[in-house]
Length: 150
Image (cartoon, rainbow, N blue to C red; front, side):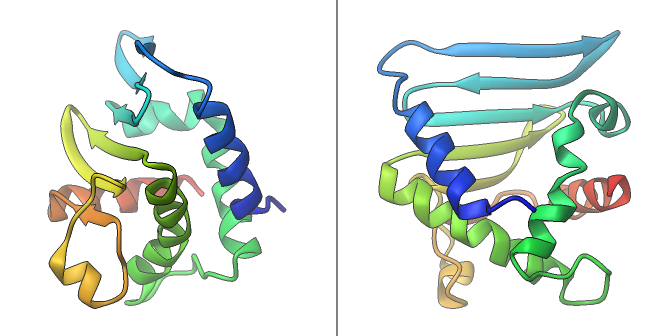
């Protein structure tokens, strides 16, 4: 099992090495499958094709192991979105403390933002600080797509 908090801290340490400029990685098979843009304080992950993400990013398959290690459930039910948010909540606080932001996009449109640049009054009132869902319907579609991969 992967220790999510340890992985998050290690990733933030490595990210801290980026002082200026940017790094872009595009994974394509025909059309773009996924792209990563890393700036000193912002990471943008743009998912273009959910079906092909499974082929190119096997680390997402281990996301299930992360969920189980962190004590959340991935077996469905009405509370599934809150289980995902609990998992993201830990990462969001670490990102905010480090002054970093991560945006998850789906087909070029921002779906969720976590970390320093995220602000949502509704989620903050439910103690989910540093998490902002920009497009709710796309977030559901993306969540269902990820869940079906696991």
